[in-house]
Every structure is written in structure tokens, then in C-alpha cells.
Length: 54
Image (cartoon, rainbow, N blue to C red):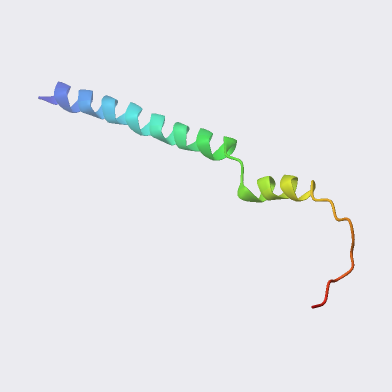
């Protein structure tokens, strides 16, 4: 029956496009590890630059 084939085609079409759009949204809104480390490294304060040789 061609109607059943078309129904499954429509269902799969929307499932695939929903998955693609969801993946793109997650990738665009995801913060990279590099951005997180650069903001953390800016808060480091050094009191001295002398090496302590043992």
C-alpha cells in the first residue's frame, strides 16, 4: 500500500530533520574547553616571580 510507505517517509523525514537541527543547536551553543580555561587563567594572581631553588 503506497499510503503506508508515504506515512513512514514523512515520519522519518521529520525525525531526521529534528535530529539534525538539535545537533546543530547543541554544537552552536556548546562552550569549548578553550574558552573556559582562558577565563579561569585570567584570575590567577602571582605574588612573586622568584624561583624557589631547593
